Image (cartoon, rainbow, N blue to C red; front, side):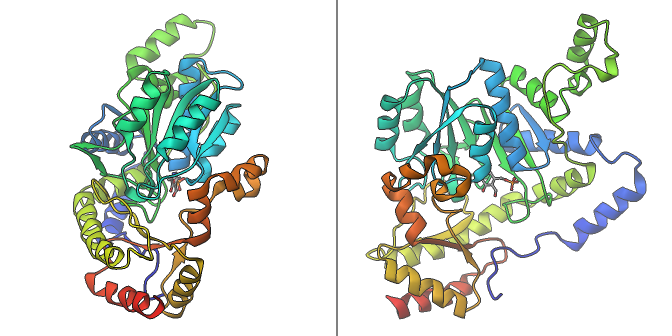
Length: 387
Ligand SMILES: Cc1ncc(COP(=O)(O)O)c(C=O)c1O
């Protein structure tokens, strides 16, 4: 591939640091490195509490499950989601016996279409939460969403798995609701190979995150809370005391160490991605009669989407990408309502007009710290040839 979706982002220095660490420790999980990464991530992100887990999907599962437990959401309660997001934003809702309500997306933000959102809130009873996705690093219109949702008491959740460092005003996304999630999977803004964070400013929620990450075990809690739980449950062995239902979604010391080293470079990586984004945006502006332009304010660019107004241009573009060995994929899996795992909702798929368009005419190519301004010449040439 001349232009893959992602190249290896782990340096030799980082590999050596892992080797040295392995030689120096006999503690490989849930030790000092995980704690250090959580502390440093919270400082970088601007939140009080972060829990390091083994994926962004696990972070989503913990967030949904914890909020359900914390607020006592019950069967048939609903969570609003976009129909273009990742599968594991929907699965934990269904697994938790909650009901997803699918909303169309807006072509500039690739997040909720505000009019469709208002409509779905009127049409549906028992909506308890809204799970925003800041797709491809574009900050969603959180202020507008909050205005619509807050009077109904709908709780805000944010998926920032593709949006590390994206901003609304001076605040990073992920700080506008009850909690937020991040992925540090290979290919995201920073990588711990596999990994993710679930973040919050609410101490009670933080405790639930800790419990659910680790089997529901009381000893996962901060010392004082653990001691309190032990006192309240004298009949059970303190080391094997389960306070709630949980999972094992822990990550390791090695992944944390890699994450700590990557975090040192994160601001520079975001700067480079956003610099690349400027070249991409110029191309879109030049061709805006054929391609939809996405929002640039506050972006922390994840990848370069091309959503064509005409199907034939989209098809020609994909052929040219193939010829030039440029890797591409749907945005980000197309309309999720067309996927077999959501067959129950398939009939709604065509009602979501913009999701349909993005599914049928949208593709993205990679952005990362290895893409150079020069690389855009080839995309420019392709667009000139086909348009
Ligand atoms: C928007 C979004 N949410 C969640 C996830 C899940 O993250 P992970 O792959 O770390 O499980 C992804 C994965 O890329 C994603 O793009």
